[in-house]
Length: 118
Image 1 (cartoon, rainbow, N blue to C red):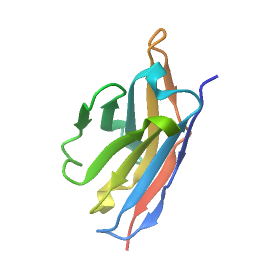
Image 2: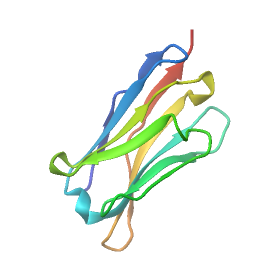
Image 3: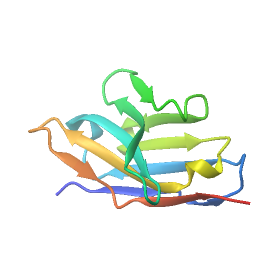
């Protein structure tokens, strides 16, 4: 059973920064994509940032471009989301997602709460 364990959420003031981590229980090269989604109360889950596990391809939602950066540490089987210049509208539960190269199975983390408030 694949596990994705997120950490790094919390309460931060507007303009502040947080770094989320997603540690996978097996090699990230067994996934063809890893990404971060978020879901705010009363809203649908949305893709925030994605990275391929081969090469340097990344993709961002327009709302976070220039503020968020997705990266990975292959040796630690971990993907990060660096979030800068946070806004109240970034408040949501953030989920790590990975899609396996074996049968395109989707895996989700348990979610981590990010609250941006003064």
